Image (cartoon, rainbow, N blue to C red):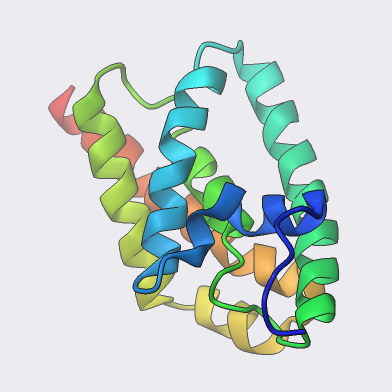
Length: 155
């Protein structure tokens, strides 16, 4: 099978509720689809937000692994749950305002595409669902660090 079955909840989540089916730039569309969900979780107190992230990461390892095995393609470009989690990591404690979400979105996409060390290393060397999730988690932390520096300097 090379196409996801979106009636399967595992494939539906892995493909970012369908956003990963975009014919061009599915990672960017997946990240965009994560933004409205971010606004739903943003009001959570920090410990609950972090618990959500940990749960979403662990779930992501399982659903991305299963979906990639079902499709017979490691890290299929349409699997974008990792982008959801990466963006949500980027936006931990982001200052209020849409501007910061846009900057966070751009920073996350930059690091997800550029893949400086160890992101690129993890992308090439770690397999399965963990490998799919790990490079985006690291990109999220890189973007988070820069976003926090910008917020402290500009906020």
